[in-house]
Length: 81
Image (tube, rainbow, N blue to C red; front, side, top):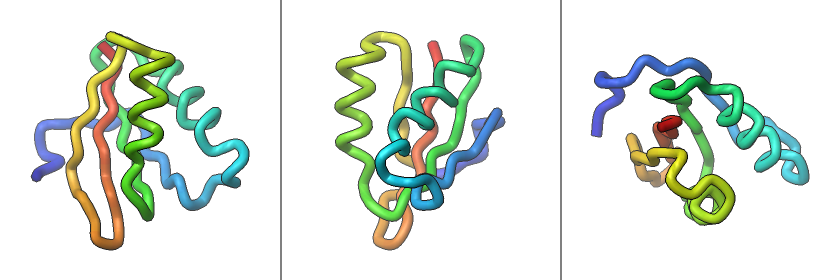
């Protein structure tokens, strides 16, 4: 897993965001991306529930690639199609 192929527009450190507004802030950042841009999400647990939410709310609009899968940090490249 490597971060080399990406030039990230923004990086979100999810643990630093208050839990009740975490997903809305992540979606806000995603919605601000232009087509072809990628953001990096860093989290302290597997963000699989967020991926499912993306699948429901932004179906066909995003890419999702794990760059690191634990044990302490998960990093995901989330791209806008």
